Image (cartoon, rainbow, N blue to C red; front, side, top):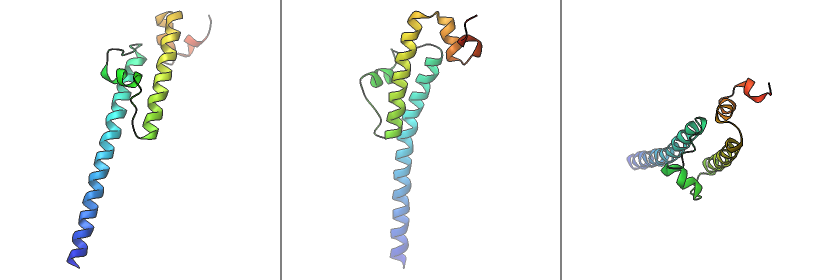
Length: 106
């Protein structure tokens, strides 16, 4: 009976340790991505940041959903950067920030 309790406690401790490691890996990648998205909202393409360089080189999370978000961010960043080359910066900023008047011709 005591042996069963010890084995159960060990299994629970192992599961908790694995869960903490996974949550750390996911939250770290997501916090990097959130910072890049925040900077993108300010039209700062973050080319000088370590996180952006890693994404450009193809470094992706092993967790599929996080990797998909990283891929989507790269495509979004490239699209906004290309768009920003041909449209005045203030117009792009207003569109990125969600100003409904910025999407219409006046």
